[in-house]
Length: 340
Image (cartoon, rainbow, N blue to C red; front, side, top):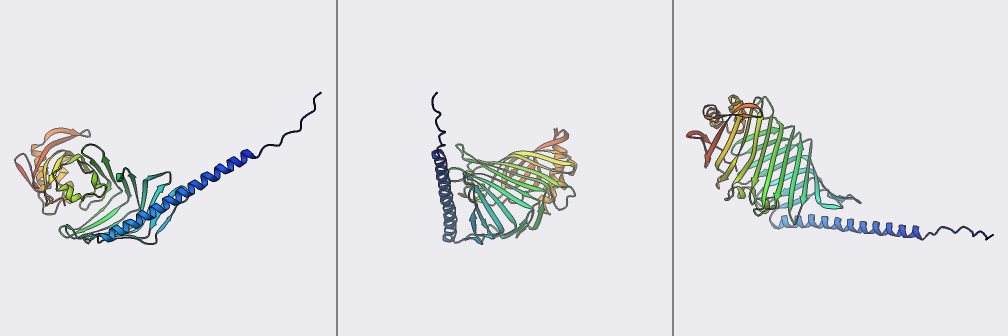
């Protein structure tokens, strides 16, 4: 009978290897996070220097940068921005969050109120508040590729030197912008409002506006101002326009160009259900003295072709616009206000 060998003690070498690997991963991740934190701080510092060099200001008060180990978090309380032309904005608090494993996707959360004032092209001010405001930015090759923002229970008051004060509140407002990497480097923008409370209207307003801007991609990167783009040669394509309130609803599409004074030219095809209430629905969106809402209702009722909209009887017309002067066929509607 062979002698029984004594039991061999388990080797600790495997534990040491695992511990060593964990320490290497933790150390490497910590170094990566520290480097990323430094890069974020440098970007903010350089942004402040660039703003100052251009005659403006970027102030991040009570600045905090943290989020270890899985996030980069930057907060400002408040955030103040100004440019050399006299435009200013102050936001009570802004928090920026980027996941450490996906730093090109940035999440922003903002606390109101927002107070802003502008000096160009004419004096105006904006006061805004909300229950919550969230935004998502996706960064591509050196520029912003996509922006999505959602405001819950927003309320805005805009005071313009030309039109006076106007207020707006809603259940929600969404803004989406996407850079389209084609030969034209375009930009698609969608604006959606649900349950908007508009003066003079007893029912809430649901609205949708989808625009396609050829060669508008640089707008997301701040390479061109919106007014400067609009006054260029590229047409703004209205992919979808929808407006509904009570028994009246409107849908449209078309294309417009703008001159240096912000006056539009082009054609917009409209389909209207509940035409008898069209003037009342559109009136709050035009200056008090404008004849366009009433004239458009008359043109739709008198000249509109029979069709349907969302299963309801409707009428369709084509509105032609020449430097702000709108007409349906040979029937003049009046002059539209400048868009910027």
